Amino acid sequence: METPATAGNDVVVEKVVVHPLVLLSVVDHFNRMGKIGSHKRVVGILLGSWSSRGVLDVSNSFAVPFDEDDRDKTVWFLDHDYLEQMFNMFKKVNAREKVVGWYHTGPKLHPNDVLINELIRRYCHSSVLVIIDAKPRHLGLPTEAYRAVEEVHEDGTPTTKSFEHIPSEIGAEEAEEVGVEHLLRDIKDTTIGSLSQRVTNQLTGLRGLSSQLSDIRNYLKQVADNQLPVNHQIIYQLQDIFNLLPDVSNPDFVKSLYIKTNDQMLVVYATALCRSIIALHNLINNKLANRDAEKKELEKKNEKKDTPKEEVKAPEVAAK
Image (tube, rainbow, N blue to C red; front, top):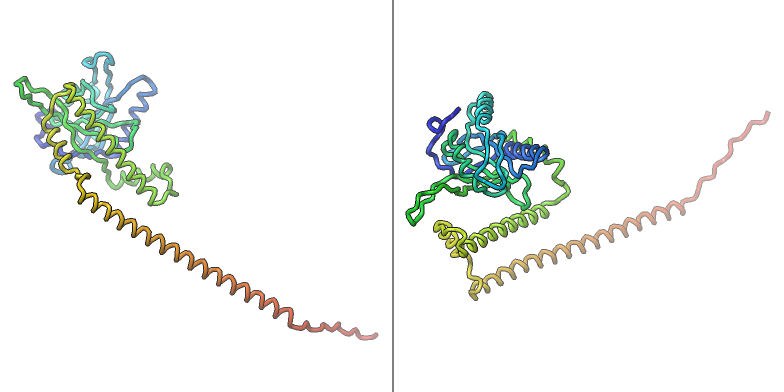
């Protein structure tokens, strides 16, 4: 089994790419454990490799027996012997995949996650934690990635371990994309047009933005109530966000916004007017074409009535 001396590297994880196979495996693990017990979350190991400098590619995973006490979060159990046996079998199939971290179904961080991460660091020095929400209640990515960092306190107290959020995304190879498309064929409604999809995507983005703003508000409220310590790095980033916000009370900004909005609405009005005129023109042309067709059909009927019918003579019967 790999140890930190052999598997560890000092590359800082800047982004985590999670493959669809990992998501399917985690959801299957969560559903299986939900049928046999009342587990609120499940835990497993992530396998993968470095696709580029700072980008961690998580391509596979497997479940690990895990249990914890709901009343005392410091009491938990993770079968690391089972972990080593499973990794040895996975290593025979694909030697390129290493232990890169672990996952649980959260949906948020737990107090004992730091202790579990210290255990996983025995097998991967720079391990990452990926929280995969098996039952997402909000639209957006179901993954959140974290890495362990040492937090230095300004009052001189000993450093403590904490988690730092890192970007994550869903990525797939060509073969995985084909498989996912086949799975989504029965789910995706092909009758929905592109406009509906665009509106849905914008609605999803707005809901995600609302969720992030709610998290920022809750964090600042807890800091103001002395429930959380002040993190100057987070405060600096929030200050940068607030500095980038436009001043909506500035008269010049309001005027330019009104002008741009009026220009856009003028284009929409002109386009709708042109479409109405074209539709009316096509209606008139269609009416004229139908009238000409009826006139020609009436002329043909009159011609048939005016033509005399030829007399049909009966054949003469020879007298015997």
